[in-house]
Image 1 (tube, rainbow, N blue to C red):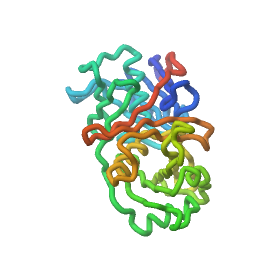
Image 2: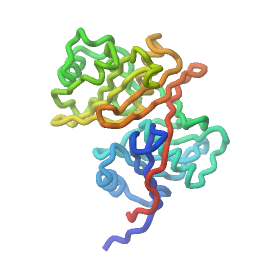
Image 3: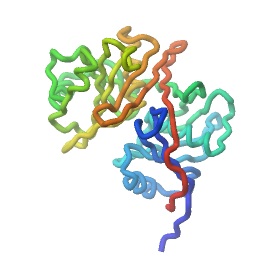
Length: 283
């Protein structure tokens, strides 16, 4: 019989100030000693978009190390797990080397997380950017049920998960998209469009995120990595301002808010974080 032991556990709602409206993240603290199969099995069992495991850093410049798992495998980086993990680490008594920021070590390297009005991570460099090859662009349009005339722009905005970004003419168009075909497991697609009157709903743009396994598709509630990539693309191209708020999750009956800001050439992705579950888990 395999000996199991308790680990401290948190479930954090990310990109929501009130809880239950953002994207939940499962966090296992002090996870050293757990083998990779156990990490993957627990991530599948939570059935959340991501589960993270906090570990001692291997880089002396980092405050902690995190491994990020989806139900299908490990990711080198993801946005809402970065904010949620930093929140959980701090709430558990973690003391960062610098009072104004936490430094996370993950698959893409070191990611600074600023401690301001809300936690905000520095967007990592894009691993792939620029135009999308015609065959892949056609696959994206077919999957989302879009015609080329509806698309303002399309680009790779991949910072680890494999995102392709698609800009549509309006937020209303974004909310109206009804995917019709499954995306391949190697492809994740985010769509973005502007609201005509941001003051009315507190949102400048609306974002949605889709991913698939070749036979089906799913929609992520609120997605930090995608918003980081979209900001790098569209602020860099002069099509979005240096500071804006993205709404995401409406079609999933969520109300996420992603606070985007460019400071001295660096994109920061911020969001509120609230612990909704805390206790222990036996692994």
